Amino acid sequence: MGPIAADVAAGGFERPLYQCGKAAGTFRLMQDILDAITSGASGEDIAALPVPESYRAAYVRRDEVDMFEGMPSHEKDPRKSLHIGEVATPELAPNEAVVAVMASSINFNTVWTSIFEPLPTFGFLDRLARESYWGERHALDKHIVGSDGSGVVLQVGSAVRNFRPGDHVVMHCNYVDDQDPSSHNDSMMAANQRIWGFETNFGGLADLTVVKANQLMPKPAHLTWEEAAVNALCASTSYRMLVSNNASAMKQGDSVLIWGASGGLGGYAVQLVLNGGGIPVGVVSSPEKAKLLNKMGCEAVIDRKAEGYRFWQDDHNQDESEWRRFGKKIRSLIGNDPDIVFEHPGRQTMGASVFVAKRGGKIVTCAATSGYMIEYDNRHLWMKLKQIVSSHFANYAEAWEMNRLIDSGAIVPIMSHVYALEDVGTAALKVHQNQHEGKLAVLCLSPEEGLGVTDQEKRERVGEDRLTLFHRHALETVPPM
Ligand SMILES: NC(=O)c1ccc[n+]([C@@H]2O[C@H](COP(=O)([O-])OP(=O)(O)OC[C@H]3O[C@@H](n4cnc5c(N)ncnc54)[C@H](OP(=O)(O)O)[C@@H]3O)[C@@H](O)[C@H]2O)c1
Image (cartoon, rainbow, N blue to C red; front, side):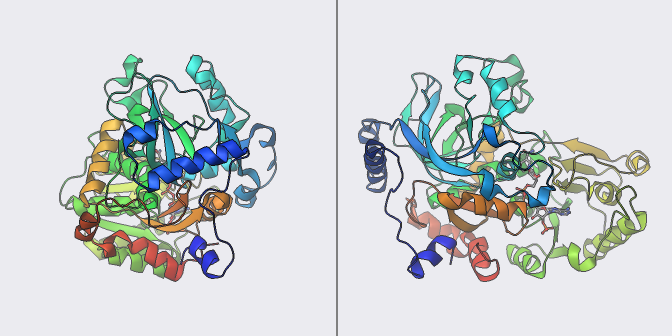
């Protein structure tokens, strides 16, 4: 049972359909929007609904960016810095859409924003404000966070062609200016490429959002709002890292070492490797997570905690014999060294990752959770002709391809627990403390879990068992709060 269901079962609270909105007017308008969505109103009817002047959102405050000063990272508590309250609805630009957000998810970037590391994100908003009239809207004293979402388009600007009010959508987080020539080969190369809800304002952890039309993608009809909301950021990032020619371009038969294989990125990476005819080796930190990977079809699993690897002897020196022990373990499982290492923990693991990749292999990296000042032994890289490949989110085409895989049922959501928007701080803390599996969903306008499926037959075809594997596993093994 998720935290919401648990509360209701315990008689703790019954959540009214729409309980927020400072002004009575906002409350009524939001309720009208929710009623229209849940009753399946036509696009025309939805287009006729007025958009409220304010809405409920999760945000950090500019005047609190120093609140954790001097504390070690792990003591910084997102429950203190993430607030839920009313914010003003921004003016709509011609190339944007207003979306009623039914559900969103926690990404690690919301953890970074909420602990103000490595920098407070208000600097990003101020920079965006200097670019244009429309950019100016973003430099507020509240940064509304969240880089994922599923929902319904309420209104579109005059330049929007492919989406209209009433469309059920998911939103990806690549925010690019298509008037910039550098964005027209691979938009991740655009000089002013940003991540929505992290480097821009008006993020997805809210009842409404304003996004560029080129962030919209059709919502897979067989998924609930919350299942649909957890995928775009992590799945598309993993897609670019593994499948796209822009990063490691995995081929059939490749073996791929996947750090954090039951986490946000890793849970999609495992599926992409299996789906593409590769051999995943998943690294996790508990027997429960190892079992979850086995259930996903990943046979080669390493429990890094049980193995007790100590790649660093102390803060300054790494231990090559531990890299060697790790490499031997991989060989014992799959008989060879990995063609690709899927890297994101960073400082703690990069030395080992470079060491264990096969001769000529690739280490593809998109992050550095445990520290970005990386050290590895360069002799193991150049003497064995290995490559370190960088990757960052995904362009629209890559995100769209990933969404197509999810829509087809080839890849399934890895949603574990579901939180109410009011509990966003707790959910972010779980991710900060690595006490979660897969992705944590957050209900925004959606009043309860399980809504939003419009193609039940397809859901049955894809299979309830596959679609709910992480959810069921989390309810059995991971405490929600
Ligand atoms: N550049 C991009 O576009 C992009 C996109 C998404 C995410 N990211 C970044 O990628 C990182 C991971 O994101 P995520 O969503 O996958 O997070 P996540 O859900 O927290 O999963 C990360 C997993 O990494 C493992 N891990 C954590 N610390 C580790 C360490 N010191 N050594 C080995 N394994 C460790 C954990 O698994 P076990 O404990 O089970 O081993 C954890 O489940 C974050 O830093 C995030 O900001 C970047």
